[in-house]
Every structure is written in C-alpha cells, then in structure tokens.
Length: 151
Image 1 (cartoon, rainbow, N blue to C red):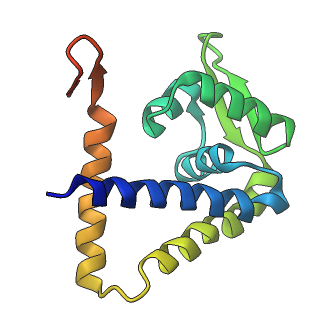
Image 2: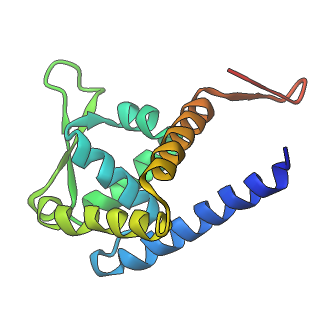
C-alpha cells in the first residue's frame, strides 16, 4: 500500500475542509472549531463541555475556548447543574437556532462537491471507510515510550 497517497488525501481533505468552512462562516463571525461545536450541539443540545470534548475527540481546552467565544457572540449559553455546580451544560440560543439551517447547509454543499462524479456505491463505501477510520482514530493514543499507537 502506498501510504503517501492516503496521507496526501487526508491532508488535502482536512486543510480544504477547514478553509471552506472558515470562509463560508464569515457572515456569522465563527471559525472552523466553533462551527464544528455548533453542529454537534445541533445534534444534541444541552451537552456538558466534557461530553462535547469526548464526542468531538478534542481536548477540553479547545472546547472551553470555543464555548466562551460562542457565548460572547450570542450563539450559546451555559447553565450550571442545579445539583452539582461543577457541571455546566451548553445550550443553543435563538441566534444559533436561526442560523441552523444555513450552517448545516454548508456541510451539505461541501459533501456534494466532494462526492461529485461518484456513484452511490462508491459514496457508501467511502462513508463506511471514513467512519471506520474516524472511529479507529478516536480510540487511539500515542505511546511516546515505544513510538507506537495503542487502542
């Protein structure tokens, strides 16, 4: 297997996806990471920051920065748990709800562009392969001691 091809493909997909979303989200004054967090909240409003961190496979610091920024921009609000004040849950505001249809449409436009000239069978196989690769990536950790991936 030529790993350089897949490395190149993942790199291009990652960089171009981020560039597209960043540019397309300018009217809402949100960046790529904020967009990803909003989309996750559209799937399930009322998550804790820890839940968002696990669901998106990113560190808690990034989530905290994105939530703070989105809160300042009026897209989300935090609410403390009534019983345990340590837990804060993130909720979409009306501003975020009003932007939902257009923001989700951006992903659809991008995915249609990426799958142009692909038949349904290839699209389905690609989705299955990418989903499996993402699941694998989410469960892996880097072992610095022996230079191997574990998971």
